[in-house]
Length: 293
Image (cartoon, rainbow, N blue to C red; front, side, top):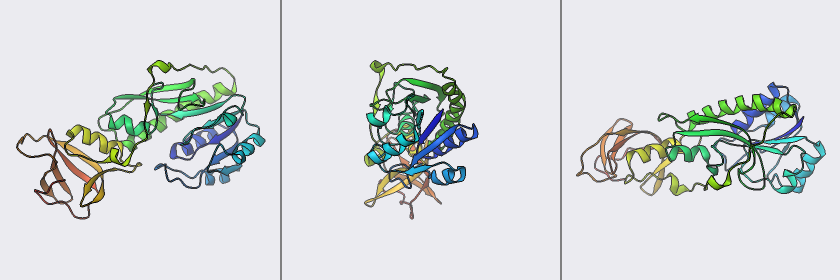
């Protein structure tokens, strides 16, 4: 089974390494040299060079140049793990076995953008790692492999990314031989129960201390590394916050956003229902006690 691989993030690199480890027949790789969109970007070209795999650095995977390069390789199947743009019909119909995509959510629910970020921000307790056959719409094709996982209260973006990567690699180890031997199943999605998460904006990362402590906690852990971080607007600048802790505070006569205490490199801010301690951040000078954020 001849495979063309498309990807440009850290999970892409791990998946490509896994398939090579399994002696998968990777005949070509499409990737990028840099990304202004993916915080978890990873350059696949060194791995391709070390493994002697033909590769092409592309900006538009649907361009005639990209499609022609892939067509000349004559792949049986394409794996697209970690790519930000939709793949169009010409490329979708090129390989006889189709294109397998990846989405770390429990499809058909939670299609769309930033699945790990939204799952943490929304405080979900469960999700899934899903490989599926791509069609012309976002994350709506038949499911090839799906494995559930729990999201703990202590998970942040990095721990969840690591967890999902580990699960995805174990799925790859199982379904690649199934594809090779043509003994896999396709499970159609129930579109009636589907929803689609939107693209996150800068405002979605702003900490508003009129929020509950738990909402702020989920926002911060959802945007922590390898992503861009939540932020506090302070003196007309966005200051990144990487980690907070929820603190019980029953002082109902203190307004939300007031700095209650400050100690060394951390400080406590009143929220609508308690307080949060700002533990890891990029403040050069801490706000003063009594100041409002």
